[in-house]
Amino acid sequence: MRTRPLMAVLSIALGGCVIVLPACPGPTVTSPTSVAPETAPVVPRPVTAPPPTPPTEPRGPNPAPLTRYAFAVLDDRPVAYWRFEEEAGVVAMDASGQNRHGRYLDGPVVGDSVGTVATGRAVSLESQTDGVLIEYAPWTDMPSLTVEAWVRASQVSSAEGMIIADKGYTWGLFIDPSGRPSFHLPGDIPPETLAPDPIVAGRNYHLAGTFDDGAMTLYVNGVAVSHGVANVTAIRSSPQPIHLGRGVGAVRFEFHGVINDVALYDRALTADAIVRHYQTGR
Ligand SMILES: [Ca+2]
Image (spheres, rainbow, N blue to C red):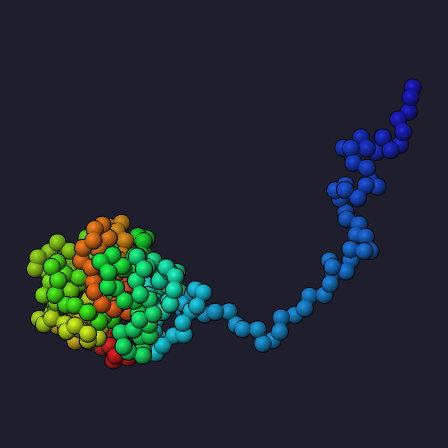
C-alpha cells in the first residue's frame, strides 16, 4: 500500500490549504516589513479642532451665518425655513436643520435683498417661470399651520393674482389681483382672509397666515388684519408640492418681486410671536 506524502495529507485534511502558504486563512503572521504602516501610532486630533456643527446650522457648501432674525425664527421651531442666502446653484437650503431643501426653478436672481439687514439675501423673481419648488413629502401635510414670508413686490396688480407660497389646492399665501394679501384655502371664494388694503410696490412687508382648528388669521407687518373661518377644522393632507413665487402646473400666478425668509410651522404661532418676528426682521 502506497503512503501519501505528508504534505499531501495535510493539504487534504485542511481542504487543500497548506500551512506554509501565507494566503491560507487563519491566524495572520505579519511580516516585519509591514509593521510600520499598520501599527503607526494614531495622531490625536488637535484640541483646537472645531466642534461638530449644531443641528440648527444651515447645511450646504456655503452656509450663511445666522442673523438675529434667523435666531428668532429658529426659536419658534419651524418645520422648514428657506433663507435664500445662496448666491449660486439650484438648491434653496432649509435652515431648520431638517434637510427640507427646495429647488430654484428657471434661474431666479439669488442674492438679492428685500432691503433689511436682518433677513440677509433673498430671491428675486421677475420672469413668468422662476420660483422655488419643494417636492411633496409627508411633513408638508400639516393640519395646523403658520406660513410667513418677507416680500417686496415690483408690481401689485395682476390678472389672476400672485402666489407667494402655496401647497397646490391645499393652502396659499397670495396677493389677489388688486394687490391685497390673502391667506386662504384655494377654491373658496371669497378667500377666508383678505387684507383690506393693497400692498405698495417697492415696499417691504412681513406677511403671515395661521390656521388653527378652522380659525384663520392674516398678519401684515405684525398686525392681524383679517380673520376668517374655514369650512374644515384641519387642513387636509394632499400629495402636492409646495411652491414659491409661481404656480406649478402652468405658467400662472407668477409673483413679480423679491421673496425672503419663508418659514413654515406645524401650528399657529401666537400673535406675540408674529409681531416679534416682524420687529426683529424689519
Ligand atoms: Ca434671507
